[in-house]
Structures are given as structure tokens and as C-alpha cells.
Amino acid sequence: MFEWVVLVLVISLLLYVLLGGADFGAGILELFSPKEKFDELKATTYQAIGPVWEANHVWLIIIIVILFNGFPAAFKVISIYLHIPLLLMLVGIIVRGTAFVFRHYDAVQGRSQKVYSRLFAWSSLITPFFLGVIAGAIVLGRMPVDVENFHQAFVAPWLNWFTVAVGIFTSSLFAFLAATFLIPEIEDRGTKELFRKNALLTNILVVVTGGLVFVAGLVEKIDFPRLFFSHPFGLVSVILATVGLLVLAVTLRKKWDQLSRLLAGLQGSLIVLGWLALQYPNLIVFIDGTVITLEAAAAPELVISILGTMLAVGVVLILPALGYLIWVFKYRKGLR
Image (cartoon, rainbow, N blue to C red):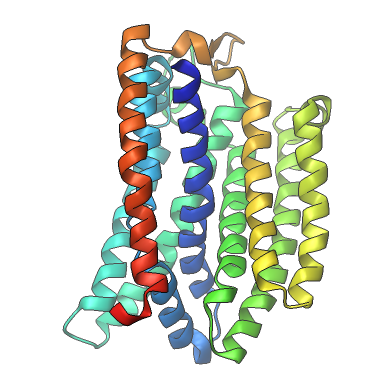
């Protein structure tokens, strides 16, 4: 049952990065869209993510439930020492969701629409940034042991060059996923070409910001290249992701949109799985070198057994419901 719980945790994280990432990325693209194309991009964003945008947070909820119930020792450390970026990420999610609803259902179509659109776009950028900061802080492994002041306990673990670089990389990755995933959803030829151009540019941006993460790691005295290349799966994921970027550039130019979408999803998956492989079996690393491993952080066997059973029931109920939701709003044209 322990392996099943871990598997659901990994799959939920993958789905949140891929589906939620494309969701957030659509808002990021609005920040940098030409004014003359903004209304078309806004309509495309709503058409593509409107029916399922709230459902994407199901994966985040599952992650939190598993960590809280299944791995309480790790959840405690993260929620205490990383509570500031966690809070900022949650505020971003709330602001983004509120702005998304109001700009489409507000009875008054006036200047307030610009405010809602700006809130939506900026919160779409800020939220994945702090998600990346949290991931970077976990990788960095500087959770405090003997706390002497506020900065040492609640700022130093997450505010440094490495975590900021991971945050920028995460936002770039999400923008790339959105630009690639949304191309097949667009009907207007001009807008479709704009998204292909955005996909190519964000593809390059992911490479540049990925390199920035390695450089920042060296600045913070983390030999990130050695860690990645000494780990078999890390090495394979880097090679495949790099090759995938080159192939994706070709598929975008050839206008093979569905294949481009598949390759983008594969790249995102390789990045997440590479990070998890690099981290395994450690969940939390403290500044003095002590660690909390995956098994050490696990709840008692009875709790894991109950959690695993509830997750199995949830999978049986959630997946068909999400499948039906997507079918109704995206493929059953007669209901529109």
C-alpha cells in the first residue's frame, strides 16, 4: 500500500505540472501578448481552460492530502519553514481564480475588465514562480536545525539565488507548456502562428533558464551538474529532454501540432521525474546534513493502508468524472 500511495503522489504531481502548468502558462502568455491580439488570446484561454481550470487543482489537493496524512513529518517541516512562499502561492491561486471568474461573468464590461485581466496574468506568473521556489528550497536542503532568529528560520531556507532561478525556470516551463498545448485549440490562423512563435521562444527560454538553475546551483555551492549526471535516471532525463527540445523545434516549424503537444508533455514529465529521482529517497534535508527519508517520514502502516484505500476509491470516482467533463465541454459540440 505504501508504494501505491507514493505512485499516486508522483502521478498527481506530474498531472499538476502538465495540466495546471499549461493552465497557469496561458495567463503568463497574456502578459506578453500584442495588444491587437489580446482579445483573441483571452477568448482562446477561456475556450481552452474555462471548462477544466478549477479541476486542475484537484491534483494539488491530492498532493496536500497525501503529504499531510501519509508523510506528516515532512509536511510539518515544509509548512513551518516554507510557510511564506506557500502562503504567497496560495494567494496567487485565489487571486487568479477570482479574476478569471469576474472577467468572464461580471455584468459590467468596463474598465474593471482591465483590472481583472492584469490580476489574472500577474497571479498566473507569480504562482508558479513560488511553486518553483518551494521545489528549489526542498532540493537545496537548507532546512534550519538550531533557529536563532526569524530570517534564519523562515527566509534563509527559500530566498537565495538557486530557489529564485528554479522559480523563474518553473514560470518559463509553464509558459512553454501553454504555448504548445493551446496551438491545436486555436482556429484563427494568425493567432495559431503567434502561438507557434511563442512556443519556439519559450522553448529557448526553458533552455536558458534551465542553464541559469545550474549556474545558480554553483553559486550556492551545489554541484548540480555532477548530481544530475552521476545519477543514471537524471542523466537520461537531461539527454532526452535536450533532444526533445531540438525535435520539438522541428515539429513546430513543420506545424505538427499534436506531436508538438505530446513532446512538450514528455519534456515536462522528464523534468519532474528527473528532479524526483535526484531527490529520492530523501524528502527533507537539513542544513547540518541530517535527512528525513521517504520511509522515515511515512505515517504508521494503518494510516497508510486507510489512505491508500481512500485514494483508490477517489481514483475510481475522479478519473471518469474528469473524463466526462472534458468530453462534454471540448468534444460534445452540441452542448455549447
